Length: 462
Image 1: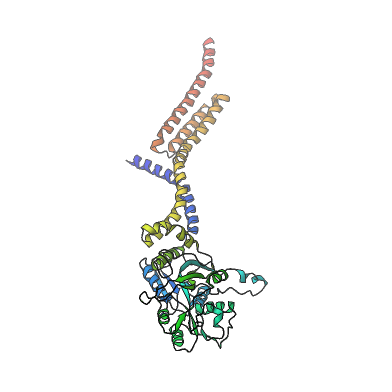
Image 2: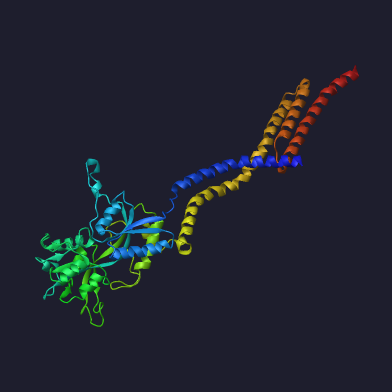
Protein backbone atom coordinates (compact mmCIF):
# COMPACT_ATOMS: atom_id res chain seq x y z
CA UNK A 1 0.00 0.00 0.00
CA UNK A 2 2.84 2.40 0.88
CA UNK A 3 4.52 1.69 -2.43
CA UNK A 4 1.36 2.58 -4.31
CA UNK A 5 1.06 5.87 -2.43
CA UNK A 6 4.70 6.62 -3.14
CA UNK A 7 4.22 5.89 -6.83
CA UNK A 8 1.13 8.12 -6.94
CA UNK A 9 3.02 10.96 -5.29
CA UNK A 10 5.86 10.53 -7.76
CA UNK A 11 3.45 10.74 -10.70
CA UNK A 12 1.73 13.78 -9.21
CA UNK A 13 5.04 15.56 -8.69
CA UNK A 14 6.06 14.91 -12.29
CA UNK A 15 2.70 16.13 -13.53
CA UNK A 16 3.02 19.33 -11.52
CA UNK A 17 6.57 19.85 -12.71
CA UNK A 18 5.32 19.50 -16.30
CA UNK A 19 2.23 21.66 -15.77
CA UNK A 20 3.77 24.74 -14.15
CA UNK A 21 5.28 26.16 -17.38
CA UNK A 22 1.87 25.72 -19.07
CA UNK A 23 0.13 27.39 -16.16
CA UNK A 24 2.65 30.24 -16.29
CA UNK A 25 2.14 30.83 -20.03
CA UNK A 26 -1.66 30.68 -19.71
CA UNK A 27 -1.58 33.06 -16.74
CA UNK A 28 0.48 35.56 -18.72
CA UNK A 29 -2.01 35.23 -21.59
CA UNK A 30 -4.88 35.78 -19.15
CA UNK A 31 -3.24 38.92 -17.76
CA UNK A 32 -2.67 40.29 -21.27
CA UNK A 33 -6.30 39.55 -22.20
CA UNK A 34 -7.53 41.41 -19.13
CA UNK A 35 -5.81 44.56 -20.41
CA UNK A 36 -7.97 44.50 -23.54
CA UNK A 37 -11.33 43.68 -21.97
CA UNK A 38 -13.57 46.67 -21.47
CA UNK A 39 -14.94 47.36 -18.00
CA UNK A 40 -18.51 46.32 -17.29
CA UNK A 41 -21.17 48.86 -18.33
CA UNK A 42 -22.34 51.21 -15.58
CA UNK A 43 -25.64 50.57 -13.82
CA UNK A 44 -26.54 54.28 -13.91
CA UNK A 45 -26.19 56.92 -16.63
CA UNK A 46 -27.41 60.52 -16.88
CA UNK A 47 -29.23 62.14 -19.80
CA UNK A 48 -29.90 65.84 -20.44
CA UNK A 49 -33.11 66.63 -22.35
CA UNK A 50 -35.15 69.87 -22.34
CA UNK A 51 -37.84 71.50 -20.25
CA UNK A 52 -40.23 69.16 -18.47
CA UNK A 53 -43.11 70.01 -20.82
CA UNK A 54 -41.12 69.37 -24.03
CA UNK A 55 -40.71 66.40 -26.33
CA UNK A 56 -37.07 65.79 -25.41
CA UNK A 57 -37.97 65.24 -21.77
CA UNK A 58 -40.90 62.96 -22.70
CA UNK A 59 -38.69 60.86 -24.95
CA UNK A 60 -36.00 60.71 -22.25
CA UNK A 61 -38.56 59.26 -19.84
CA UNK A 62 -39.49 56.61 -22.41
CA UNK A 63 -35.81 55.69 -22.84
CA UNK A 64 -35.53 55.37 -19.07
CA UNK A 65 -38.45 52.93 -18.94
CA UNK A 66 -36.91 50.76 -21.66
CA UNK A 67 -33.41 50.76 -20.15
CA UNK A 68 -34.87 49.86 -16.76
CA UNK A 69 -35.94 46.50 -18.24
CA UNK A 70 -32.23 45.69 -18.65
CA UNK A 71 -31.30 46.83 -15.16
CA UNK A 72 -29.88 50.20 -16.25
CA UNK A 73 -31.01 53.36 -14.45
CA UNK A 74 -31.28 56.36 -16.79
CA UNK A 75 -31.54 59.61 -14.85
CA UNK A 76 -33.32 62.22 -16.98
CA UNK A 77 -32.47 65.86 -16.28
CA UNK A 78 -34.24 68.93 -17.60
CA UNK A 79 -32.40 71.76 -19.33
CA UNK A 80 -32.95 75.00 -21.25
CA UNK A 81 -32.41 73.19 -24.55
CA UNK A 82 -29.84 71.85 -26.97
CA UNK A 83 -27.16 74.46 -26.27
CA UNK A 84 -27.17 73.67 -22.56
CA UNK A 85 -27.19 69.95 -23.32
CA UNK A 86 -23.98 70.31 -25.33
CA UNK A 87 -22.33 72.32 -22.58
CA UNK A 88 -23.13 69.59 -20.09
CA UNK A 89 -21.72 66.91 -22.36
CA UNK A 90 -18.48 68.84 -22.77
CA UNK A 91 -18.13 69.62 -19.06
CA UNK A 92 -15.76 67.04 -17.57
CA UNK A 93 -17.19 67.69 -14.12
CA UNK A 94 -20.77 67.01 -15.22
CA UNK A 95 -22.28 63.52 -15.00
CA UNK A 96 -24.26 63.91 -18.22
CA UNK A 97 -23.13 61.48 -20.94
CA UNK A 98 -26.26 61.41 -23.12
CA UNK A 99 -28.36 64.19 -24.62
CA UNK A 100 -30.86 64.96 -27.34
CA UNK A 101 -29.55 67.82 -29.47
CA UNK A 102 -31.25 69.64 -32.29
CA UNK A 103 -29.47 69.63 -35.65
CA UNK A 104 -27.86 72.93 -36.59
CA UNK A 105 -26.90 73.95 -33.05
CA UNK A 106 -23.35 75.30 -32.89
CA UNK A 107 -21.05 72.79 -31.24
CA UNK A 108 -18.56 74.48 -28.89
CA UNK A 109 -14.90 73.93 -29.78
CA UNK A 110 -11.95 74.24 -27.38
CA UNK A 111 -10.30 77.64 -27.64
CA UNK A 112 -6.60 77.86 -28.50
CA UNK A 113 -4.57 79.40 -25.66
CA UNK A 114 -1.11 79.43 -27.25
CA UNK A 115 1.07 77.96 -29.94
CA UNK A 116 0.91 74.52 -28.37
CA UNK A 117 -2.89 74.67 -28.53
CA UNK A 118 -3.11 76.40 -31.88
CA UNK A 119 -4.65 73.35 -33.50
CA UNK A 120 -7.02 72.56 -30.65
CA UNK A 121 -9.82 74.71 -32.04
CA UNK A 122 -10.00 72.56 -35.16
CA UNK A 123 -10.08 69.26 -33.30
CA UNK A 124 -13.52 67.64 -33.00
CA UNK A 125 -15.07 67.65 -29.53
CA UNK A 126 -15.12 64.37 -27.59
CA UNK A 127 -18.67 63.64 -28.70
CA UNK A 128 -20.25 60.93 -30.83
CA UNK A 129 -23.58 60.70 -32.59
CA UNK A 130 -25.88 57.70 -32.30
CA UNK A 131 -27.89 59.03 -35.22
CA UNK A 132 -31.01 61.11 -35.85
CA UNK A 133 -34.15 60.12 -33.96
CA UNK A 134 -36.89 62.03 -35.80
CA UNK A 135 -37.64 65.12 -37.85
CA UNK A 136 -38.19 68.39 -36.01
CA UNK A 137 -40.24 70.60 -38.35
CA UNK A 138 -39.36 74.27 -38.46
CA UNK A 139 -42.73 76.01 -38.21
CA UNK A 140 -42.90 79.70 -38.97
CA UNK A 141 -46.32 80.95 -37.84
CA UNK A 142 -47.33 84.48 -38.78
CA UNK A 143 -50.29 86.85 -38.84
CA UNK A 144 -51.45 88.90 -41.79
CA UNK A 145 -53.65 88.85 -44.84
CA UNK A 146 -50.81 88.29 -47.27
CA UNK A 147 -49.43 84.79 -47.73
CA UNK A 148 -45.69 84.59 -47.01
CA UNK A 149 -43.38 81.95 -48.48
CA UNK A 150 -39.93 83.49 -47.97
CA UNK A 151 -38.21 84.49 -44.76
CA UNK A 152 -36.94 87.83 -46.06
CA UNK A 153 -40.57 88.94 -46.08
CA UNK A 154 -40.37 89.03 -42.25
CA UNK A 155 -37.92 91.95 -42.26
CA UNK A 156 -39.02 94.69 -39.89
CA UNK A 157 -41.54 92.49 -38.08
CA UNK A 158 -41.57 91.42 -34.44
CA UNK A 159 -40.49 87.79 -34.34
CA UNK A 160 -40.30 85.29 -31.47
CA UNK A 161 -37.13 83.26 -31.98
CA UNK A 162 -37.10 81.12 -28.84
CA UNK A 163 -35.63 81.41 -25.38
CA UNK A 164 -31.93 81.85 -24.71
CA UNK A 165 -30.12 78.50 -24.85
CA UNK A 166 -32.82 76.80 -26.92
CA UNK A 167 -32.09 75.04 -30.19
CA UNK A 168 -34.73 76.95 -32.13
CA UNK A 169 -33.12 80.30 -31.30
CA UNK A 170 -29.77 79.41 -32.86
CA UNK A 171 -31.42 77.96 -35.96
CA UNK A 172 -33.82 80.91 -36.36
CA UNK A 173 -30.95 83.40 -36.18
CA UNK A 174 -29.00 81.47 -38.84
CA UNK A 175 -31.98 81.38 -41.20
CA UNK A 176 -32.85 85.04 -40.70
CA UNK A 177 -29.25 86.13 -41.21
CA UNK A 178 -29.09 84.13 -44.43
CA UNK A 179 -32.12 86.12 -45.61
CA UNK A 180 -30.56 89.46 -44.58
CA UNK A 181 -33.22 90.07 -41.95
CA UNK A 182 -31.73 92.41 -39.31
CA UNK A 183 -30.88 90.53 -36.14
CA UNK A 184 -31.53 93.00 -33.35
CA UNK A 185 -33.20 92.97 -29.94
CA UNK A 186 -35.89 95.41 -31.11
CA UNK A 187 -37.42 92.96 -33.56
CA UNK A 188 -36.26 89.54 -32.32
CA UNK A 189 -37.84 88.52 -29.02
CA UNK A 190 -36.66 85.79 -26.65
CA UNK A 191 -39.99 84.01 -26.51
CA UNK A 192 -40.79 80.39 -27.14
CA UNK A 193 -43.40 77.70 -26.64
CA UNK A 194 -46.90 78.52 -25.44
CA UNK A 195 -45.83 82.00 -24.36
CA UNK A 196 -44.89 82.83 -27.95
CA UNK A 197 -48.17 81.30 -29.14
CA UNK A 198 -50.14 83.51 -26.77
CA UNK A 199 -48.30 86.64 -27.92
CA UNK A 200 -48.95 85.76 -31.57
CA UNK A 201 -52.65 85.07 -30.91
CA UNK A 202 -53.00 88.43 -29.20
CA UNK A 203 -51.28 90.21 -32.08
CA UNK A 204 -48.45 91.54 -29.95
CA UNK A 205 -45.91 89.88 -32.26
CA UNK A 206 -46.04 89.22 -35.99
CA UNK A 207 -44.36 85.82 -36.32
CA UNK A 208 -42.92 82.99 -34.26
CA UNK A 209 -40.39 80.25 -34.95
CA UNK A 210 -41.31 76.91 -33.43
CA UNK A 211 -39.55 73.56 -33.65
CA UNK A 212 -41.84 70.78 -32.46
CA UNK A 213 -43.74 67.76 -33.65
CA UNK A 214 -47.22 68.35 -35.13
CA UNK A 215 -48.73 66.74 -32.03
CA UNK A 216 -47.06 69.28 -29.69
CA UNK A 217 -49.54 71.54 -27.85
CA UNK A 218 -47.94 74.76 -29.12
CA UNK A 219 -48.24 73.58 -32.74
CA UNK A 220 -51.83 72.37 -32.31
CA UNK A 221 -52.82 75.66 -30.70
CA UNK A 222 -51.33 77.78 -33.49
CA UNK A 223 -52.61 75.59 -36.31
CA UNK A 224 -56.16 76.16 -35.01
CA UNK A 225 -55.79 79.84 -34.10
CA UNK A 226 -57.88 82.22 -36.25
CA UNK A 227 -55.78 84.58 -38.31
CA UNK A 228 -52.55 82.56 -37.79
CA UNK A 229 -50.94 80.98 -40.83
CA UNK A 230 -47.98 78.66 -41.34
CA UNK A 231 -45.31 79.58 -43.88
CA UNK A 232 -44.91 77.37 -46.94
CA UNK A 233 -41.16 77.38 -47.77
CA UNK A 234 -40.97 77.89 -51.52
CA UNK A 235 -37.16 77.83 -51.37
CA UNK A 236 -36.90 74.68 -49.23
CA UNK A 237 -34.62 72.90 -51.67
CA UNK A 238 -32.14 75.79 -51.58
CA UNK A 239 -32.05 75.69 -47.77
CA UNK A 240 -31.16 71.98 -47.76
CA UNK A 241 -28.17 72.72 -50.00
CA UNK A 242 -26.94 75.61 -47.87
CA UNK A 243 -27.66 74.00 -44.52
CA UNK A 244 -26.90 70.24 -44.81
CA UNK A 245 -28.49 69.46 -41.45
CA UNK A 246 -31.90 70.58 -42.78
CA UNK A 247 -34.32 68.43 -44.74
CA UNK A 248 -37.29 69.25 -46.94
CA UNK A 249 -40.54 67.70 -45.71
CA UNK A 250 -44.17 68.03 -46.67
CA UNK A 251 -47.17 68.36 -44.40
CA UNK A 252 -49.84 66.63 -46.50
CA UNK A 253 -53.18 68.25 -47.22
CA UNK A 254 -55.66 67.39 -44.46
CA UNK A 255 -52.99 65.80 -42.22
CA UNK A 256 -53.92 67.95 -39.21
CA UNK A 257 -57.71 67.76 -39.59
CA UNK A 258 -59.32 65.52 -42.22
CA UNK A 259 -62.84 66.83 -41.63
CA UNK A 260 -61.92 70.52 -42.01
CA UNK A 261 -59.21 69.65 -44.57
CA UNK A 262 -56.41 71.46 -42.76
CA UNK A 263 -54.01 72.36 -44.11
CA UNK A 264 -55.99 73.01 -47.31
CA UNK A 265 -52.98 72.09 -49.48
CA UNK A 266 -49.61 70.40 -49.17
CA UNK A 267 -47.32 72.62 -47.11
CA UNK A 268 -43.56 72.46 -47.59
CA UNK A 269 -41.56 72.82 -44.38
CA UNK A 270 -37.94 72.68 -43.36
CA UNK A 271 -36.91 70.21 -40.71
CA UNK A 272 -33.92 69.70 -38.51
CA UNK A 273 -33.35 66.38 -36.79
CA UNK A 274 -33.25 65.51 -33.13
CA UNK A 275 -29.92 63.76 -32.66
CA UNK A 276 -28.91 61.44 -29.85
CA UNK A 277 -25.44 62.60 -28.80
CA UNK A 278 -23.17 60.84 -26.30
CA UNK A 279 -19.75 61.48 -24.84
CA UNK A 280 -17.06 59.33 -26.43
CA UNK A 281 -16.44 57.64 -23.07
CA UNK A 282 -19.94 56.12 -22.82
CA UNK A 283 -19.74 52.32 -22.71
CA UNK A 284 -20.52 50.72 -26.13
CA UNK A 285 -23.04 48.35 -24.50
CA UNK A 286 -25.04 51.33 -23.22
CA UNK A 287 -24.83 52.91 -26.68
CA UNK A 288 -26.28 49.74 -28.20
CA UNK A 289 -29.02 49.63 -25.57
CA UNK A 290 -29.92 53.28 -26.29
CA UNK A 291 -30.22 52.52 -30.00
CA UNK A 292 -32.57 49.64 -29.30
CA UNK A 293 -34.67 51.95 -27.12
CA UNK A 294 -34.63 54.62 -29.85
CA UNK A 295 -35.87 52.10 -32.44
CA UNK A 296 -38.74 51.19 -30.18
CA UNK A 297 -39.65 54.82 -29.48
CA UNK A 298 -39.04 56.47 -32.86
CA UNK A 299 -39.43 53.62 -35.35
CA UNK A 300 -43.14 54.09 -35.97
CA UNK A 301 -44.76 55.93 -38.89
CA UNK A 302 -45.66 59.61 -38.44
CA UNK A 303 -46.63 62.79 -40.25
CA UNK A 304 -43.25 63.04 -41.98
CA UNK A 305 -41.83 59.55 -41.90
CA UNK A 306 -42.56 55.96 -42.78
CA UNK A 307 -42.18 53.07 -40.39
CA UNK A 308 -38.51 52.24 -39.91
CA UNK A 309 -37.17 55.55 -41.26
CA UNK A 310 -35.74 56.38 -37.83
CA UNK A 311 -33.37 56.16 -36.12
CA UNK A 312 -30.94 56.80 -38.95
CA UNK A 313 -27.80 58.77 -39.79
CA UNK A 314 -29.01 62.03 -41.35
CA UNK A 315 -26.89 64.66 -39.61
CA UNK A 316 -23.12 64.35 -40.13
CA UNK A 317 -22.12 67.20 -37.80
CA UNK A 318 -20.44 64.74 -35.43
CA UNK A 319 -18.69 61.39 -36.00
CA UNK A 320 -21.01 58.41 -35.81
CA UNK A 321 -20.19 55.98 -33.00
CA UNK A 322 -18.84 52.59 -34.07
CA UNK A 323 -21.63 50.89 -32.11
CA UNK A 324 -24.18 52.91 -34.10
CA UNK A 325 -22.59 52.02 -37.44
CA UNK A 326 -22.75 48.32 -36.53
CA UNK A 327 -26.34 48.69 -35.34
CA UNK A 328 -27.54 50.35 -38.56
CA UNK A 329 -25.71 47.75 -40.63
CA UNK A 330 -26.67 44.53 -38.85
CA UNK A 331 -29.01 45.35 -35.97
CA UNK A 332 -28.47 44.70 -32.25
CA UNK A 333 -25.42 42.68 -31.16
CA UNK A 334 -25.91 38.94 -31.71
CA UNK A 335 -25.92 37.98 -28.04
CA UNK A 336 -28.35 40.75 -27.06
CA UNK A 337 -30.89 39.37 -29.52
CA UNK A 338 -31.25 36.11 -27.61
CA UNK A 339 -30.03 36.76 -24.07
CA UNK A 340 -30.94 39.24 -21.34
CA UNK A 341 -28.68 42.29 -21.36
CA UNK A 342 -26.67 41.27 -18.28
CA UNK A 343 -26.15 37.74 -19.61
CA UNK A 344 -25.12 39.00 -23.06
CA UNK A 345 -22.56 41.34 -21.50
CA UNK A 346 -21.20 38.58 -19.25
CA UNK A 347 -20.81 36.13 -22.14
CA UNK A 348 -19.25 38.79 -24.36
CA UNK A 349 -16.68 39.67 -21.70
CA UNK A 350 -15.90 36.00 -21.04
CA UNK A 351 -15.36 35.36 -24.74
CA UNK A 352 -12.93 38.26 -24.99
CA UNK A 353 -11.19 37.07 -21.83
CA UNK A 354 -11.05 33.31 -22.45
CA UNK A 355 -10.57 33.10 -26.21
CA UNK A 356 -6.86 34.02 -26.14
CA UNK A 357 -6.40 31.80 -23.09
CA UNK A 358 -7.83 28.80 -24.94
CA UNK A 359 -5.82 29.74 -28.01
CA UNK A 360 -2.69 29.31 -25.88
CA UNK A 361 -3.94 26.37 -23.85
CA UNK A 362 -4.93 24.02 -26.67
CA UNK A 363 -1.50 23.71 -28.33
CA UNK A 364 0.19 23.54 -24.92
CA UNK A 365 -2.09 20.71 -23.80
CA UNK A 366 -1.24 18.83 -26.99
CA UNK A 367 2.49 18.98 -26.30
CA UNK A 368 2.13 18.39 -22.54
CA UNK A 369 2.23 14.54 -22.79
CA UNK A 370 5.44 14.74 -24.81
CA UNK A 371 6.98 17.11 -22.26
CA UNK A 372 5.91 14.84 -19.41
CA UNK A 373 7.35 11.77 -21.13
CA UNK A 374 10.60 13.58 -21.86
CA UNK A 375 10.95 14.64 -18.22
CA UNK A 376 10.50 11.09 -16.98
CA UNK A 377 12.77 9.51 -19.59
CA UNK A 378 15.47 12.12 -19.00
CA UNK A 379 15.92 10.77 -15.46
CA UNK A 380 16.91 7.37 -16.87
CA UNK A 381 18.81 8.82 -19.83
CA UNK A 382 21.17 10.61 -17.46
CA UNK A 383 22.04 7.19 -15.99
CA UNK A 384 22.55 5.88 -19.51
CA UNK A 385 25.07 8.65 -20.05
CA UNK A 386 27.13 7.49 -17.06
CA UNK A 387 26.81 3.88 -18.16
CA UNK A 388 27.94 4.61 -21.70
CA UNK A 389 30.93 6.59 -20.45
CA UNK A 390 31.96 3.67 -18.20
CA UNK A 391 31.49 1.11 -20.97
CA UNK A 392 33.69 3.10 -23.35
CA UNK A 393 36.34 3.40 -20.67
CA UNK A 394 36.30 -0.35 -20.08
CA UNK A 395 36.50 -1.24 -23.76
CA UNK A 396 39.22 1.26 -24.66
CA UNK A 397 41.38 1.28 -21.57
CA UNK A 398 40.56 -1.71 -19.40
CA UNK A 399 42.70 -2.02 -16.26
CA UNK A 400 42.28 -5.34 -14.42
CA UNK A 401 43.41 -3.76 -11.20
CA UNK A 402 40.43 -1.41 -11.29
CA UNK A 403 37.77 -4.10 -11.73
CA UNK A 404 36.35 -3.55 -8.27
CA UNK A 405 36.12 0.19 -9.02
CA UNK A 406 34.26 -0.57 -12.25
CA UNK A 407 31.83 -2.83 -10.44
CA UNK A 408 31.32 -0.23 -7.73
CA UNK A 409 30.53 2.42 -10.34
CA UNK A 410 28.01 0.07 -11.96
CA UNK A 411 26.36 -0.47 -8.59
CA UNK A 412 26.15 3.29 -8.02
CA UNK A 413 24.55 3.81 -11.47
CA UNK A 414 22.01 1.10 -10.68
CA UNK A 415 21.33 2.54 -7.24
CA UNK A 416 20.94 6.05 -8.68
CA UNK A 417 18.41 4.76 -11.21
CA UNK A 418 16.54 2.96 -8.47
CA UNK A 419 16.30 6.16 -6.45
CA UNK A 420 14.96 8.11 -9.41
CA UNK A 421 11.27 8.94 -9.01
CA UNK A 422 9.96 6.95 -11.97
CA UNK A 423 6.16 6.56 -12.37
CA UNK A 424 4.92 2.98 -12.64
CA UNK A 425 3.91 3.51 -16.25
CA UNK A 426 7.58 4.03 -17.12
CA UNK A 427 9.03 1.21 -14.97
CA UNK A 428 10.08 -0.66 -18.11
CA UNK A 429 12.77 2.00 -18.65
CA UNK A 430 14.30 1.18 -15.27
CA UNK A 431 14.34 -2.56 -15.86
CA UNK A 432 15.76 -2.11 -19.34
CA UNK A 433 18.54 -0.01 -17.80
CA UNK A 434 19.28 -2.80 -15.29
CA UNK A 435 19.59 -5.28 -18.15
CA UNK A 436 22.09 -3.00 -19.85
CA UNK A 437 24.02 -2.61 -16.60
CA UNK A 438 24.16 -6.41 -16.40
CA UNK A 439 25.51 -6.48 -19.95
CA UNK A 440 28.40 -4.26 -18.86
CA UNK A 441 28.98 -6.58 -15.85
CA UNK A 442 29.15 -9.54 -18.23
CA UNK A 443 31.67 -7.59 -20.28
CA UNK A 444 33.79 -7.11 -17.16
CA UNK A 445 33.53 -10.83 -16.34
CA UNK A 446 34.55 -11.75 -19.86
CA UNK A 447 37.53 -9.40 -19.80
CA UNK A 448 38.50 -10.81 -16.40
CA UNK A 449 38.40 -14.37 -17.72
CA UNK A 450 40.50 -13.36 -20.71
CA UNK A 451 43.11 -11.94 -18.34
CA UNK A 452 43.14 -15.09 -16.18
CA UNK A 453 43.38 -17.48 -19.12
CA UNK A 454 47.02 -16.67 -20.07
CA UNK A 455 48.04 -16.80 -16.44
CA UNK A 456 46.48 -20.24 -15.94
CA UNK A 457 48.06 -21.47 -19.19
CA UNK A 458 51.52 -20.31 -18.05
CA UNK A 459 51.11 -22.00 -14.67
CA UNK A 460 50.17 -25.29 -16.35
CA UNK A 461 53.29 -25.21 -18.54
CA UNK A 462 55.42 -24.54 -15.57
